[in-house]
Image (cartoon, rainbow, N blue to C red; front, side, top):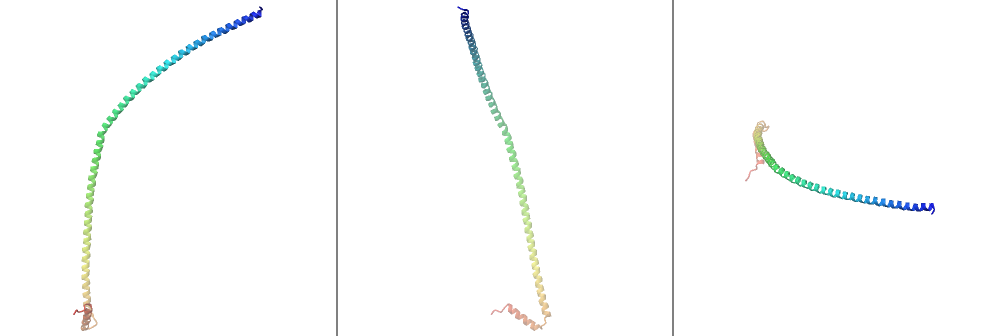
Length: 184
């Protein structure tokens, strides 16, 4: 055997040894990594389980608080409704009182207006009656004055007529008979 053969045999042995060592190291690393990965997965699973449990506990507490808040809100609403009843009654009473007063005031105003209207109608009626009486009085006076004027005119005509008395009487008689013919 030559040196080169020995080196080559030695090289093969060394290569196989290195390869074996590398495989052994790789197996060790894989085992370590596998065990670290398993530990990490176990830790993560435990953390996830604890987180879920904590969330469930917090959710339960939140639901309890929500129910308590809802009950408190319901109680407060009932109290508010109970407290508002007297205010509503007072407001209704006040409104009713105001409406009653307004109605009374309107009735009084209507009565005053009615009285004023009646007085105005009566005054107008009295004025119209006075005017009618005054017109009737003037008419009567005017008729009397007309008759007096007519009588005065007839007397003046008879006294100042250009015909003699007998002829005037004859003309008056014919005129009279023309107005009122004799009935037989």
